[in-house]
Amino acid sequence: MQAKEIIEHKFSRAFRGYDVGEVDAFLDEILRDQERLEQELELLEVRNKMLLEELGRLNPAFLIHAAPAGEPESIDK
Image 1 (spheres, rainbow, N blue to C red):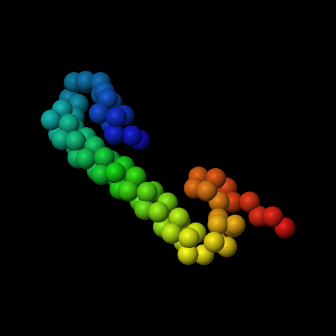
Image 2: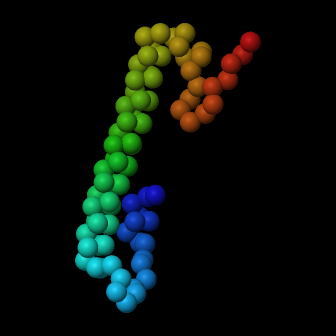
């Protein structure tokens, strides 16, 4: 679930339902965590790419067997 979906999600109101303020506070907490996780993932993806590039420079044979990120690795026999 993306942060935008959390922000835009609407709940229906019901008699004797949940405390709106409590639900909003909880959703705000989830939103902060989601945004932090998305930023952390982006940073880790960049770091992974940099490390793979460095490994390729240090060991060019690695590039022959490494598949680009997000693509399945193919094995030629």
